[in-house]
Length: 201
Ligand code: GAR
Image 1 (cartoon, rainbow, N blue to C red):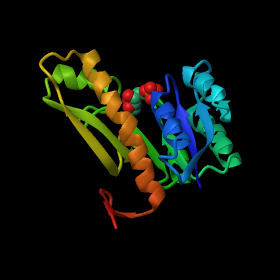
Image 2: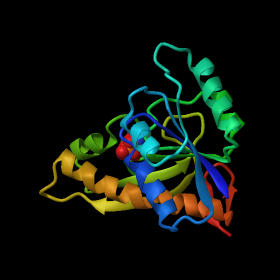
Image 3: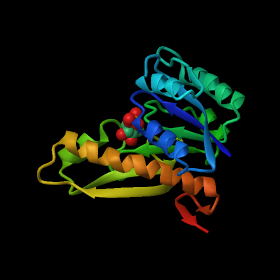
């Protein structure tokens, strides 16, 4: 089984959706090796403990990125992680970290990239006035919310939406999209063509 290292900073609803899909058998080829947070009281860590999953916190506040990332890497290696899953991990990764897992780090972002990278993407999209919104799962490179895309899911912005309701409907898509992307990567049935394209083979 492919061993996942889940990195998060907060609520962890994407992590929980993945954990549920593993438990129900919808993701048969993967298991969660470790849940890792950079925030001490991330609600997701308590949720992971309740599921009897291994957890670890490396507090990032006030520490140089390279040094903190080295601790994170060491924990991932100790736990024999094959694939790193960023699930609301709200911190940039150092180049050293990214190069340690080449095309083995996935991120989910609540916009149709390359539009609206960064914080509060759903509010950015809503305030811009887009008519189609969505989420993206992608391999991670050195840039923020950037890298070869695995899949995207789109939803219409409704006239009745506000930023909150839009974010909720995007989140529902995220919960399906992330497991689908992980399954695709776990299957190994893909190739990355140059710097941009990921396609089925
Ligand atoms: C999700 O909406 C995720 O797409 C977003 O943070 C939220 C985490 O929620 N990530 C980013 O904005 C990355 N730039 P969760 O903790 O409930 O999964």
